[in-house]
Length: 433
Image 1 (cartoon, rainbow, N blue to C red):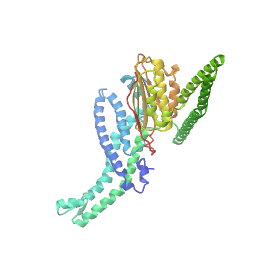
Image 2: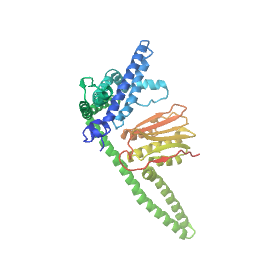
Image 3: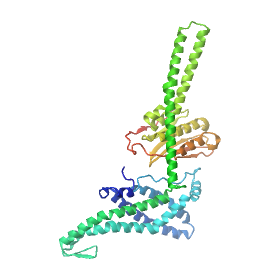
Image 4: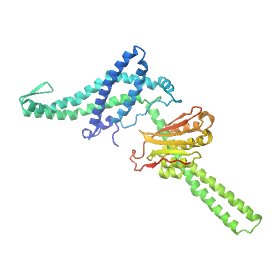
């Protein structure tokens, strides 16, 4: 398996020839520059804070810088760093500020920002100067001698007066560049671990306990989905086929029976069998639609939008995802569309789905009357529980008078990123009038 961070890369024999030394150097250099800029910003905000004008900006600078840092982590940490903040329950700047001020994550991010602006950025630049600047100065000794023509000072200390000495210094610089790449990557790994611990912490419990809970929960989800598919297959291949045969037999008997009470009863039985077959097919589709298994979540959501009683515009662009994630995303979209049709009084809805940054984001909005309440028996509580099993999150913004926005977020990784060959399917925008 390819390394995901500098600590793992250090154990590989081909580490000096990989991109990890340069990724580590880039992470530390950008950290030094960003920290210097943050130091300047904090000095300016500190002056304004004397007049109580800069205090809100000082508080909000932490989350802003943390967002940049979580993106910068991708240089040396390939595992996504999730945003720990919750989405406000109500729209507007005031609701957003109240939520952020009450979150522990906001204060951790402010602490990290102050640490970066005062302590970390000089250490980053010192590490780069030692690991790259010192070998670089030695590598440039022959150039210095050629420019001067008589002598050159290697790293401003050792006087070099001949080309053999200059090339020996350059060789030493090359060896040091390789040797110091290891401690440079170790420093970058430690910096990244500190940033992840403060900016994307795992709340509560020991790491071992959390890992076991996550693993057992994943096994339960996989077992549940496997059982759901088995039930769907048994109904499709067993009960449905028998009902089809029964319907055909009743139809043939109805044609052969002479007019009279017997023919009437056969016609009634034939009609009832046809209705039962229709209901069974709808039940099978609700358990696990075949389009979801064959073509993925994008096609299944487009199919659900086409069958909605309210016209739905779709903007869905998804690769193939793990089966449990696709199933949860599909039923989240179906439940949201069903609520739009039953409760919102909307004239039109919109469904958007993307898988970016290791997170599946599915949004359903409508222009209805709003006022959706998860405690009102609309199925939203059960949907939130279903997403929570996959470490997902459900957010609903539905002020009285509308509009309503339902957002489901599920951490995931596409099958192509998991080294499983698959081709993404795109559902283009469509509307059903």
